[in-house]
Length: 95
Image 1 (cartoon, rainbow, N blue to C red):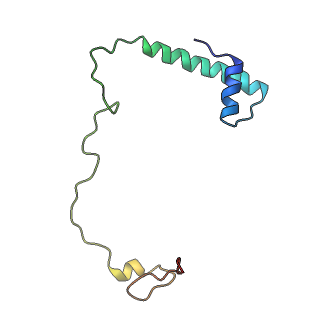
Image 2: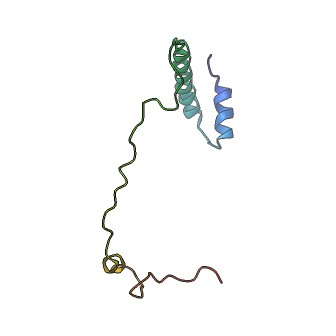
Image 3: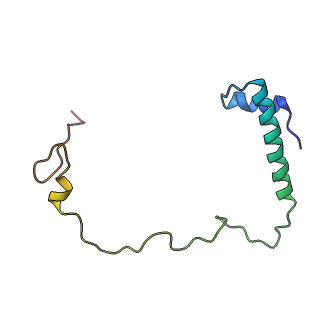
């Protein structure tokens, strides 16, 4: 399958991109090579490959949930523009 310049121009209009004639020519060639590559991937026999959600196996992506000491209140409030010694003071947002 090859892409025509008109198809690329239509896609650019849908994407609200204004491309020059040279950019349209360049994008047509680049998108055509991408489509050709994807077509090559379609020729690969994947009948023995189980479908998966990720390309690589993910495990242990989160760190262990360990209890650690928190920042002392005074240190947490030290750089606050306004505070009352216990909480941050912020302008009222509602009414």
